[in-house]
Length: 219
Ligand code: MN3
Image (cartoon, rainbow, N blue to C red; front, side):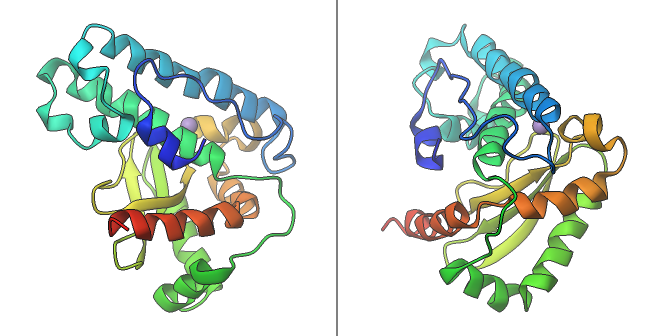
């Protein structure tokens, strides 16, 4: 489930299987936590988005990204449901796709260079990313995104909101809704976030960074 594919997909949206086994992220995320998150929470967003769009044939040809970047042009009655459920689909697919089993991988290539350039060092970047994730009040997400100059930023969004997808390409994101970690970590969000750093799929992240730069520059 590459971002490209997600963006081309149209109604009816399908539940994408995880790109790994349900126990692959253990011990950082155990099988029960991941199963509930994927099979219940994420699936509900997919089902709800399809249900919202079922009465609007003219919107069924729009990709997820097209829907999310044109919310204010949609019929008023479905703006909030598309924003919440469409965002829920987009965010969870990127989140699940951006992780891998917690075994040695580190930032490499041009993404590693960009992290050093824009944040000073990996350690400093990690501190800021952690602060954004742990410090997000209530439910939401912390993201690493690139702009068209290849400059990286850390962004927080509330609920299931997405960053401005016309100007930024997401590299990866971390879910800080309680449903992402509560079964295993209860209220210890900081422990979950610390573990999540070991799940980052840096190989995919590097590819997203390079592809994102090209996409934003129409290359
Ligand atoms: Mn979630």
